[in-house]
Length: 528
Image (tube, rainbow, N blue to C red):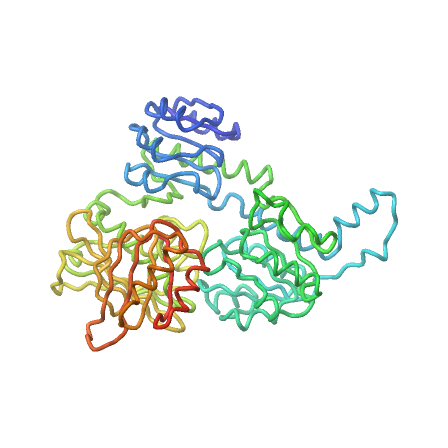
């Protein structure tokens, strides 16, 4: 066995891999350099610098596993790896402590004016009265996103005597109360409660600019805000204006809308009114070692014939279970992602129904694929191994039903999500081997190919609706690759559903324009 390690990986991780394989530890390489040598290796271990492209993966004819020493896998072409049958693993928990501790450090640095006071003393000044701070004891911390990092921050806050309120659509009232906090189901009811707000969610369509002029105006006057999660969750211009006006007393920010051009952020103009750090959340020596050791151990396991614990693209399931249903894994995850991204409200239950020949098979792998699709739309670090555990931990009820009732397809699977506001149902099927189709969206009968970018537009069934939507997309530089208009079973219903596959991302500004077209009910962009 041969393993290639690129980027700077901790030496302890190298030693773990050397237990089972010959290791070449080389500097970061460009695509063409890697393509020339990658065919001789059985495993590849990288950090964020190496871009593992489809071209590299295509040349990796002996590759079994690619390990990313960290959380994000944006630098690895997951689709290409999956098609090639290569497992991709990461380390979703390696920097949990580091990120949580940095959040608390930012909270305290902001409250006690530590950066400004430090700079003042180093200038030979003694300005004690200028840097009077505030205590956290007895104050309320609002946590948005109650995953592992959010929970760790909450534990520390409770230990410091703070009160806790939590908003997260993927947890339950009972779980938060058992933890020691108060669950706020709707964000509309959340904003006015906390004295401090900390964010621990991924950046998604729903969380982009989550903190904006409108939501800031609903907050308690003098609120303090911390963001060590993802840039873009906070509208930086809105935060700048709120701090200048006094609506927000202060903020502590570790991540930014445009980190490559952070010098252009209006937040830099706020001086001592804000604490800023350069994305240091995971930057501890322990975290860097932890993620490297974790991924190295998984590479060791896979090369030794064992399962990976954090596979992000291929489920760690025994071949005899996976083989009969493997063709349905991709469509199961796709319909789950569509359902999750179109639902409104907080998730309360999941119903999975398999029909046709699938009803006679063990569909537990498909259940895992559905859970991963649903949860990964809004949570970081969800994979085929931990998806069932996360769902159970958050009190999400999952029901699987089988029906041998004949359908138009050999086998089909549907996912129904129940929230506190509505039910959403999406069904998928194979119309031929490896030919996937979305065959139902709520009550609409469809036959659309799932694609990376999809736009769903319910609208009044009248002339020129397609033309108006297409015109907006064209004006904003979005190309339509495929399109279908679907109708309900009830042909008398005058609401149709436009389903459009696009070649790129549809920005929120474009969605707003489409939503304003007379006759359009709404517009939702889906990213698979």
